[in-house]
Length: 411
Image (cartoon, rainbow, N blue to C red; front, top):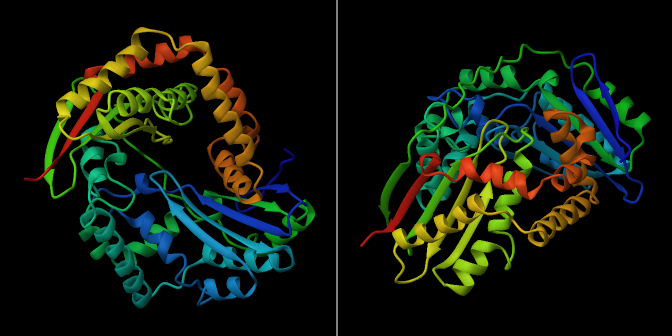
């Protein structure tokens, strides 16, 4: 992939890939701030800003209207590590995208009215997703069970509803100017736009934005877990559910690729081990899934499922542990490993055909390392061996490294 890069004088990192097969252009900005950067008593701010950034900026009262008139679309997402904003716009109207994104990086239109509106939206989302939905509080239960000191111990939406309800305008302004800065962001531009034009527009609209004193990240790393952690809750839900988690490495560790492959061996498609053996053959579960968090600091490999009628949570857990023990005690066969690797390769290739996906991925890889890493992902998955999978599984799937949550149906 042809990748162009430049760092502006104010610290903004620009990455670019031209794709003349489309008449559209994508702008993706990733800010190096997420829920892990919040104060334990002021959580949910990164997610709140995902909404505030659409509430108007210093010179543009309505973000959506001019973009829609230009034939563009936009969205955003936040997780524990980063906040990501993106838009697509026809190449003939591309400057509108640079104008909109640069103005809200410069400064938001901070007002009590805007804060009240977006705070209300976020609080309603919290209630709908976490309080009024079956199993909605899983993140609020499992995370503090797995993390005792690291700020991954609360979900992106926030630890407590009161943290957003009590957020003041001064607190919100402070969070913005400590994190939303050109020297804390990567701008990826892809689609039908030349490198020369990309540099010109970036310099014109983003160049004048001053650097800011970005908060120094001082995260306390989670100590090694030395004993199993368990919790049982009862809720008004239709079915019992089992949630298990094992501590794993960070996204930037070479063993991450082995963990990702292990999770797919366990649960990706009808022929994966958990699905084939425990859902289809033994019918111990009605649904069962395994996945990794992929976080920039040490993350979790998680397993969640709903036991079939008549199967206790204890029986369900024992069946899962038996499958994990097999990964610890024997090597994955070459054919099974190759099948999973082929899936990863096809996912990577097809995922990077779309210009918007390319923008998102380039921004992420540049933030966490270098944009060129996008072309090395397949190679990293291909290099994982059965021996490495065994060496990763053996210390990970130990009882003392596990977190278990029984989520029971209330009688």
